[in-house]
Image 1 (tube, one colour):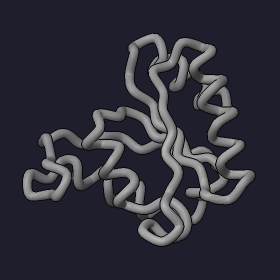
Image 2: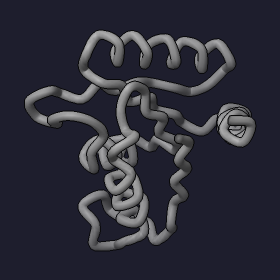
Image 3: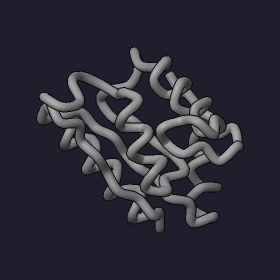
Length: 116
């Protein structure tokens, strides 16, 4: 947990964009909002996204990560989802380096941090 806090503080101090992705149920929405408010209180440039139940389905998926990437988000934090979607995050992170990727790869491999 200390490593995660250090990374988040580095992102906040560097004015990097952070997105909290919650779940569409009530505890996911509330958890995402509380986390977003806490990060804002620390000075973060943060927003949140809640998956559409019909369009996105359940949990974290590549589309949500690609949307964050297109929006200039540097760091994604999941809240009440994502633990079973390691493949989605890893796949999207690698795709950002692919010039043929649908997310307009920039040739740079972006890191993915998992805290379980």
